[in-house]
Amino acid sequence: DAGVIQSPRHEVTEMGQEVTLRCKPISGHNSLFWYRQTMMRGLELLIYFNNNVPIDDSGMPEDRFSAKMPNASFSTLKIQPSEPRDSAVYFCASSYLGGAGETQYFGPGTRLLVL
Amino acid sequence: GQQVMQIPQYQHVQEGEDFTTYCNSSTTLSNIQWYKQRPGGHPVFLIQLVKSGEVKKQKRLTFQFGEAKKNSSLHITATQTTDVGTYFCALIWGGNNRLAFGKGNQVVVIP
View 1 (tube, helix red, strand yellow):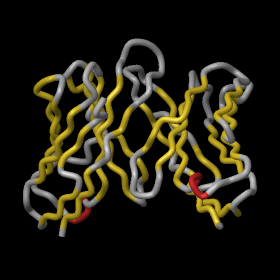
View 2 (cartoon, each protein chain N blue to C red):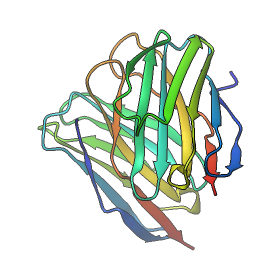
View 3 (cartoon, rainbow over the protein chains, first blue to last red):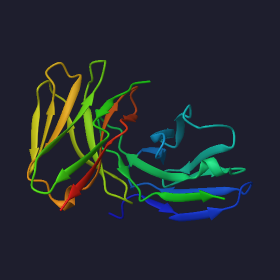
């Protein structure tokens, strides 16, 4: 199994530019999660999907952030326009919701730097 | 939302020594998970605890769930340099496999 795949692995952009992060969950998993990790705030859940449907986006910082999951094998997290304070590591994770307490499998992350 | 507090936040451990990291909640937990994140890496699942008083071992790692299911601990014996990283506990809440992570315990191993 290839695991959760994220791209790009690193992104450097200038303030005001649009940034799109991509995620391919593990095949067969029906839950997908986007997290943001910073030194100050730790690991924060931004949004999660079940069966491609957004369930809770209360963690999304503001309207500049949006996420989509057009099918079971692909999700995007978009920041438009980006700001320096968006600099962080963004993780995508997937799991199978079929009982209690399934493991979340994290991708390698996208390290975003907004100048 | 649900929260778990982890103590300590940072530890420097001499290679060969033992250490423990703790995870506390003000409310009763249905279960708790532990993850490890190596420097520059991503969180990796270690274990899940479900039952009151449960103890699970993975080689040099011992995980425990408190009797009241409000706290958990991870104890590592004979620390090795490969144990360096941040250890997170996480609780499942609100259904749908949603996890709330603690701030983590960053462990530095001194050779």
